[in-house]
Image (cartoon, rainbow, N blue to C red; front, side, top):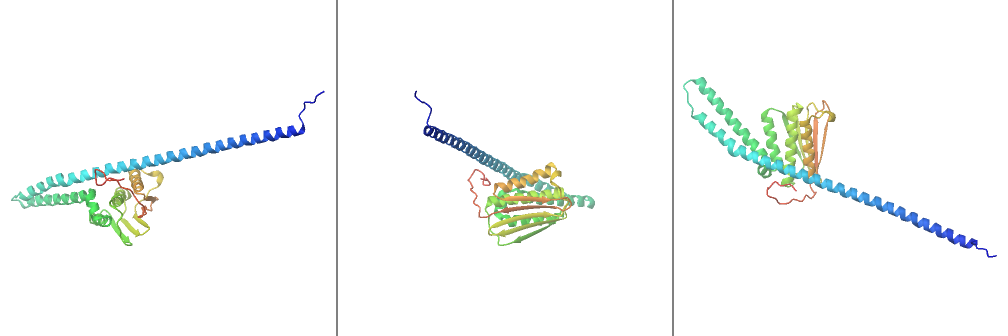
Length: 278
């Protein structure tokens, strides 16, 4: 009678083979899982990059449109409205009446028109890309601070530390728009009596700070207009590779801080408009 039962050696070979097979199969499954997870992470990273690029391009396009609008409005103020008001002022100067009270009133109106012309001219300059880039960031902000103090709306103080260096027209334009947005928020919402603007020039880092002593606010109580203004500040900073931080609490005023590495390379593309951001 022939015994067909497997020997212990054959059982050992089968057991080893089965073990190797299952180890190989387990390794293959683990490798497949790791590869799948790696691919998922890679796809997620690519999506995040695409979303970040889309957001960046969207912000750039929006800022371009804003700058084009500013330029157009500034040109209209300078070329058309100023011209009309100048004619009105000239006509008022030509009116002569016998009654001194009426003549005084005419002179007062002429002075008011003259003041409006001056204010519109200043506004036109503050909207003009060419004017801002011609003067540079520091001089442009100095002019705005001087106008603020003359207006009596707020007591503004400008502090400049370090050796001033240029950061490029596009960056300085965006930084000035951030300054304008912060000042506008202060005047409209804060009720502040004092405004402190600091420009800190360090070789490795530029810092712009705008602080007020107004009523302040909490993050949970932002109204739509203020929230949009603060969001504009953060968006503009992002476009030039800067970081904007805004801190405030009720009764403690508001502080806007923008940090920018001046050595960061920003690629600009020449476009139809001289103020094109890229």
